[in-house]
Image (tube, rainbow, N blue to C red; front, side):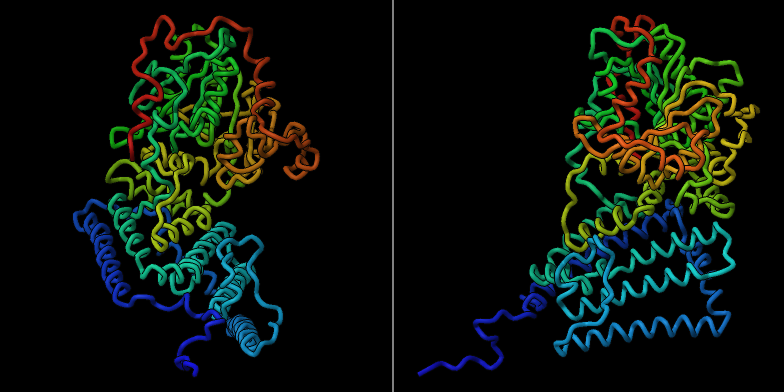
Amino acid sequence: MTTKQPIDAPPQDRADPTSDFVVKDPEAFARNMAHVLEEIGKAASAWVGPRERGEMVEDTPVSMGEIVQTLSKVSEYWLTDPTRAIEAQTSLFTNYMNVWNNSIRRMAGEAPVDPVEPPKGDKRFADKQWSEHLFFDFVKQVYILTTRWADDLLERTEGLDPHTRHKAEFYLKQVENALSPSNFVLTNPELYRETLACNGENLVRGMKMFAEDMKAGGGMLRLRQSDSSTFQVGRDMALTPGKVVAQNDICQIIQYAPQTATVFKRPLLIVPPWINKFYILDLKPEKSFINWLVGQGHTVFVISWVNPDDRQAMKDWHDYIQEGIVFGLDTVEAATGQKEVNTIGYCVGGTLLGASLAYLKATGDERIASTTFLTTQIDFTYAGDLKVFVDEAQLQTLERAMEKKGYLEGAQMATAFNLLRSGDLIWPYFVNNYLRGKEPLPFDLLYWNADSTRMPKANHLFYLRNCYLENRLSRGEMEIAGVQLDLSKVDIPIYNLATREDHIAPARSVFQGSRAFGSQVTYVLSGSGHIAGVVNPPEKNKYQYWTGPAPKEAGTYEDWLVAAKETPGSWWPHWQEWIAPLSGNKVKARKPGGRKLKPIEDAPGSYVKVKA
């Protein structure tokens, strides 16, 4: 006698293909969905509260109105001509029908014809269910097809000025990244399976983090990219021994303790960006550029910029030159007795340093004997996607937003930089944190990236207008305190490092800026991007760098690339070979402060620890 199997039970020797997509415990799932709504309510309260109290100034990098206004110029081109509109709609509909027909073919057991595939290496669609499951495969193909169709429409839109086209391309990419089916539980097979497997507990954890991050951002979402609890500046990073030997309202000057019995006679002053904190060059000892410099026998000083508030609102570039770079030169001279100084400028710190070279030359101060620029733009013709955020209308909006507090919140700059690579720096973390409910892993670089700084109103507006909008510095049109800056009169040795995959200071832009100086510039191109291409210790044996002719002799950037020689590994030893002859003989190692300056506190100082 045999026992009949229930009619609705799957065969015991075959797995149910739909089992991963069925709620396991409806009661637990419903209870967790109630908790999800509760946490969403907390997030909404954290968003609304600051706005009701008048504490929140809407100063997002790009307003929705700006996006709609820009993209409407594209749609206007297609909708004002019926023939073009019908052509566009027919093309999209035909392609949709092809996807639908392929789905029917698969259901009938036939092979699809020319299926729409994602770009090779697109991690969003790595899960096998994106291809094996009919529904998710259909959703994936429709998304890819639609984004390609939209990109093609924009490319064929006529009558757009270059800036509007650039903005439209950038905004369209943001919309496409945001609408990816991988960002939603119901259209992401991996998320869907995880959610049902744990009855929605992942969403409870995720929405709890979402509410916490909204509260932490004071009404703006502060997306966590790293486990911040595992890091502390001065304990886990910024560990190179030294002392703060001088300070004022704009910066602290740190002098690092020697690690060798003798040091080069000529000291080294580093000018980091004020948009981020200096310890990107001093993370942990094994990948600290500053620690490596000290170990090579340099007497290293670094400017640690203040994290400004309303007291620095009217500090402009002249103040940052006088109270930052000149103050640093004075401090180096007092601590070491040396007038001539080698300098390094990183990112916008390098742009300020470049302006300083012309300003100090014009005012008779020639203490800077050589300069190294790290991913620094001097000419902004090819400044990349950051130019999207700068036009006359946006500058006026930004000025109004900064009027109340006197500064730009650090979160806005962080968001702007994240938008440049939203597919890597926003949406993967949105999915991991808020939909999968997983804490991000500890990562020192992303901890630093989130440790943002505010922007003083006068300084920031001067920078955006004179550099990004009007490109005055390389043209000899920038004025500081009545002094017109002429970089062609700067004749000191210059080492100019660009990184090949830089999305903030594109290599072509850095190359173009090299032509503005009166001296022959040593232009070097490193592998990787804005951070990893710079912070690349030789021991890691990673990436490579290229050397070639001086930019003024090379022709175009493409010509330089053809002539360039590739060398495996870090650019640091190459730079050391360049700087050593410019650093003088060896002298007895110097203690921080020397005989004239009394150390104020241990490195990394207190200014760098102030949170935005």
